[in-house]
Length: 79
Image (cartoon, rainbow, N blue to C red; front, side, top):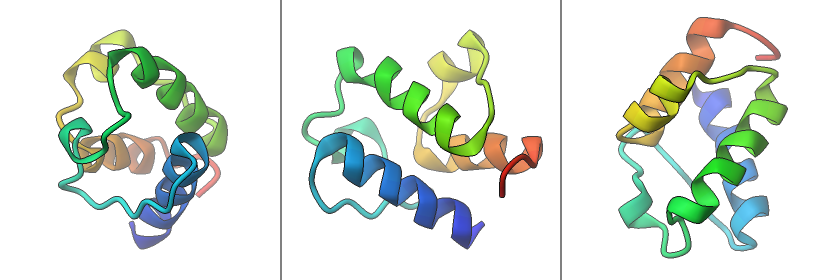
């Protein structure tokens, strides 16, 4: 899981153009520019990085980065 969080931190840092380290508890409330408009584009960037596709239910149901990482881990692609 550590490598997943490292790669997610890189995606988030690139996307928001600032140094961001995410963990399982990180939410949109923790990152100033992470709003509903940026959310879908961010999800697409994460999907590209890990070679996964999230369902709409997964995207709308994710409460934190930990849930995102668990889905990525379960899919087991490009890890």
